Image (cartoon, rainbow, N blue to C red):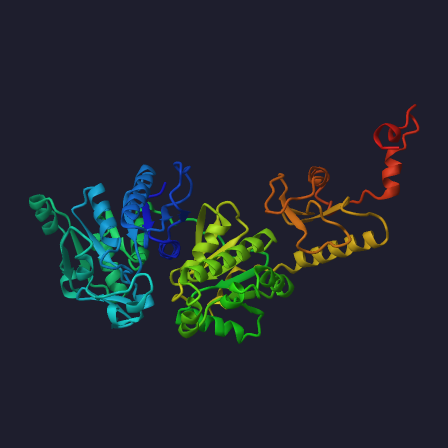
Amino acid sequence: MAVLGCIADDFTGASDAASFLVKGGMSVRLYNGIPEHKAQADEAQAIVIALKSRTQETEYAVEDSLKAAAFLLNQGVKQLYFKYCSTFDSTPSGNIGPVADALMELINAPCTILCPALPVNGRTVENGNLLVNGIPLHESHMKNHPLTPMWDSKIAKLMEPQSKYECLNVNAAELKEFCLDSVYKEYQKSGRPIYIIPDYINSNDGETIAEIFGQLPLLTGGSGILEPLAKIWTKKLSSEGNIPTSATTGKALILAGSCSNATLGQIAWYKNQNTPCYKLDPKAMMEGRQTIEDAWTFIKDHTTETESVLVYSSDTPEKVKEYQKMGIEAVASMLEGATAELAVRAVDAGFTRIISAGGETSGAVTKGLGFSSYWMGESVAPGVPIMVPTERSDIRLILKSGNFGQEDFFGRALAMTTNYDPELKSKLDTAVWIAHSLFERGKTSGSSANLSFRHKDHIYISISGSSFGTMKEDDFAVISLDGSILSEKKPSKEWPLHLTLYGKSPDIGAVIHTHSTYSVLWSLYLPQRNTTVSRTILPT
């Protein structure tokens, strides 16, 4: 049963939080939105719910956050965590204060912490000031953020116009001696909860913060204290969670929409590896000179088991400003819609690895794919986990915020998720060759035939409607030996016949069902009967 419930204000923030919980030893299930029904008991020790409350109207952000909290408490969690961005991402009329206030009031918490720091990614708190790589928040790149421009680095100052409650700064020296007893006594007198802002400069501070405040029923912050907090819970639970494997077989597609310096550097690195790349040009798309079909054709023509296409719309700030003259919302909606559709097409075509760079891009991709929840795996970079949809255990999804990840991030993501199987590749090649040969020799026609082969614990069978004459490696669905269909592709309707034959002997490695002309006629020739079957079944 889950003991920790996390409410995140966007999807990439949720996956960021989940990655650090996994690193701390917990098994984590992430839900894309608030589940409609109580979840069944499973192996999850922590549940993370991804909302869209960062830029929602405040009323709806609070409402959704309280609904998420109610779901988590109904699941039996012992502790709530409100996760927001490590750069605080909140304006004077932002949602961090109202949501945190509402959650404290919901559970009658005497206090909680505001802890946005994530030192591993350069976000620290010193004397109550939030710094980005040593630069005060309001002097960093965040001062010009298009949705949540930052106007101060003092966290208490940022909270003043948002929250009903006071803040207490606790510097590094005070933190070592800090005791919650005085806070509890003050709450008993006033009845008003407070926010505590602890300094967090290095990883040791994170462990100290988790030790001092880890027993509070509600914590808020970035992902910086989630790893030490998870370690505390893992110790209490006396067991580490089950983490899914990173690797899977199948092709990969990389999508990038972030215009951050980090993502631009990652795109440049990938291009330098002489890999296939395709740029979505907003102007050309708006004018109809470039289409999604063009991009998809490029992807199909250039993707192999060992070669992956990068499709990107990321560009320099100067170019972005130029494109925005065509309409900021129109351009953004078009690009996000395009990347989402490409991701959906890829999965429908049998791709099993989708890597996405950029918060808005990743949000569009997850919405398009429509998976309801994910199991969290190991991280490619701090805050960027490998995710496995609960509905599709063969798929690996990697979503990163724009500024996250190393220069060679895309290469690392591909390497960690690949499980290239030369034996499977050989069997697919052979199956395609046999299909073409039978068709060319007139042993079958149209889409009447089907074939399958056994590989380890799975059966690969030609998809419904496929023709031996045009068969490709992608034209195979996957079925388990117990008859469960494991792929999105629809298998031939003859799959029960194939499965029955495989059940006869483990030595059966392949089944070919051709419906060839003379075989059909022979099957209808039953001389021991007085009537001819063909006359009653076949048209004359």
